Length: 253
Image 1 (cartoon, rainbow, N blue to C red):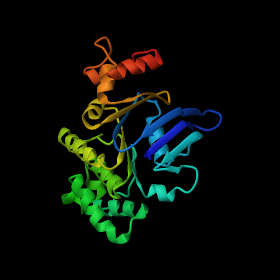
Image 2 (cartoon, rainbow, N blue to C red):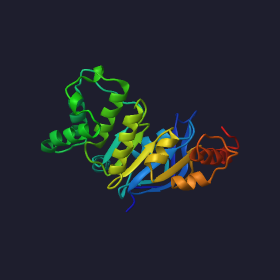
Image 3 (cartoon, one colour):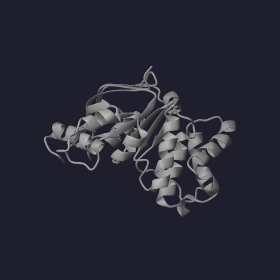
């Protein structure tokens, strides 16, 4: 069973009159491992992540998560998901531990399991010593790490992370890569990012989208092999990315 299966997936945004297909006929199969989601601004990455997180409904095609079609009861699937949106809100007076506990409760985790699960999640992101601090006192990078903690607190089978390393310093990004590699041994992890080097370092598989459709899916080595020195980019993987995007759009941008 694939964790994520999409066939001719369409997701329309912006209303009926001025709307557009942010995801347009996308086919995708993802299983266990760490998958990087790349694409230029406006490619549909965030809309795709939101749809996989069951926040946004498909407009057409079909989507299944963990063997369950996303056209009926969502609560059983949501219990098995972890999701870090690009921007997330919180009550500023929440303590760090309280916030992660609250999200665990929303995911309908058994009450007896929540304290231990919260402790493990905070330890994994290096925030055990800040557990009693209020959210409003944290730096941007720390808030991002709390967001990662709430996403993994329920040991999800599908983990969806939208720009998870924004605000993290180099040492924290290295620890994040180690964490997702560990999580990918038992779960399907999908990371949307603009940082191509994070994909090269952390991911076993790369998904490249442009204009709402799938352009490429393969290993980081396959992406490297798609480029030449004539393409834009400081690294081989960036040149591969540039080659595929320019072939799709007809422009190096």
